[in-house]
Length: 213
Image (cartoon, rainbow, N blue to C red; front, side, top):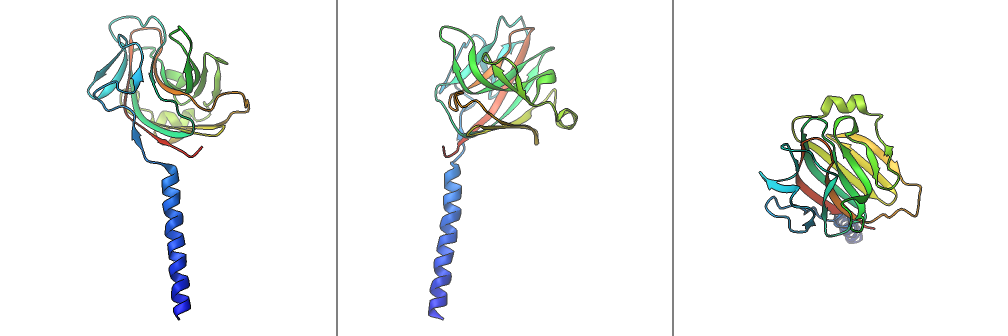
């Protein structure tokens, strides 16, 4: 009986340890934007402001001269990023840069973008590199049922190794595996307002969980 009790106790300890290790390896959610300041971020603050606890890119008062990005100072590799986004203005386009880098002496960045706006919602675009949509679009009908054009939308972006997954309001729109091993799997995160007509992109509740590399 004593042997059985000891064995049972050992298995319990092992199971608890395994569960704890699994939870710990996933990391804890870190708030990237505190709703009050641009601490940890850099970009053209003539084009980005803080309003009602949100990052607001662009303006409804005049044309947006060119693409602008508010970027993290820190780089990230494997992670799960969560945030809320809404857009305003006719013809508005925006997006979230991941595993990206700034171009030297230029307003542009290079890297993957979780796209936002009109027909681009939920697609994966390659900004200033291959300059094309890499994945997405096959869930248009399903996405149309849950997309909130005039309200907040929940975006979840998961990067793990060569795999990138995008989920918008609970609909997984992209499950992409990068085949080019020379493309960086680490970089900054950026919030975009696209050049064009008067428009705004609002971002809030931005958190990230770093995964084990």
